[in-house]
Length: 142
Image (cartoon, rainbow, N blue to C red):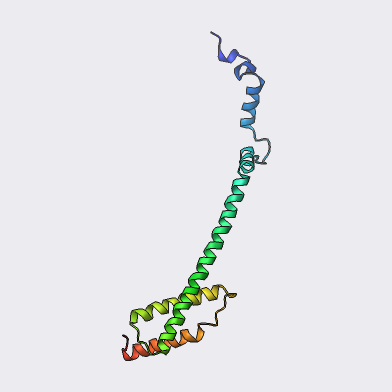
């Protein structure tokens, strides 16, 4: 049996390839980081990434549409409630609380979306708030 110290380095490390591998593992040749697996992964998933981006855009569009429809629904409830007040209908405190929440939601949407037309509820919202304050003062809820 031969002593390991007597073996030439080439035989010890499987020839030149083994020696080169050991040498490269110990010495950093350049500070540039090359990641061929990441490059290959990006190339392979390019189509999938595009589909995910397209899907994300569609989700954002749907979310915008839902938020706008919610604002329109709030506006309808506000205007209907205002009409009922004008016709002398009495409402419970819970009904006022709900419409006041609708007013808050609607106004927040309008503030965040200046292109959305908002002139339809400004006066009605003020009237509802005035009647609400009067009902609080007189304890005259339904």
